Amino acid sequence: MPLRQKKDFMAKAITAPEQERSAAKPVDNQVTSLIARSTQFLKDVRSEMRKVVTPAWAEVQSTTIVVLVTVFAFAAFFYVVDSVLDRALRVLLHWLGGL
Image (cartoon, rainbow, N blue to C red; front, side, top):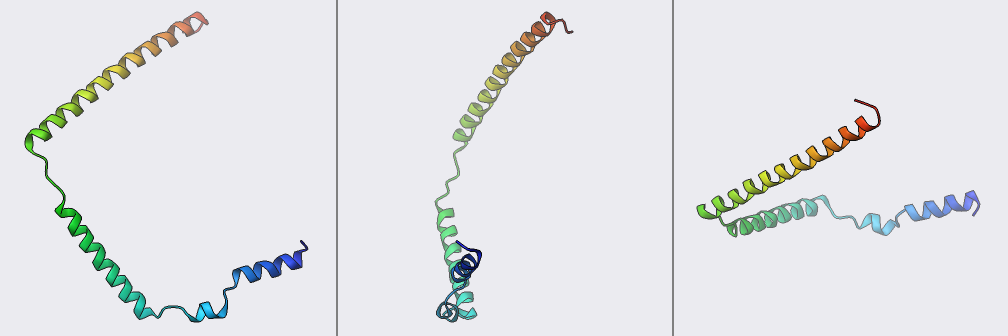
C-alpha cells in the first residue's frame, strides 16, 4: 500500500463521524450518573459488610496454632535443605581445589 493511501486510511479510522461527536452526554448526566453509581456502590458495600462474621475465639486459637506449626515445619525443612546444599557445595569446592 503506498504511503498516501495508508495515511488516508488511518485518518478515516481515527476520525469519528460527526453524529457520534454531537451525541455526547451533557455534563449534568455524567455527574448524576456518578452520584447514582457511587450511591449504589456504597449500598453494596454495606450489604456485604453485614455478611461478615467474626470468628469465635476457639477458631482463632486453632487456626493460629496451625499457622505457627506450619511456619516452624517449613523453617525446619528449609534449614535442613540449606544445610545439605551448603555441605555439598563445600565438598565440591574442596574437591575442585578451592577452600
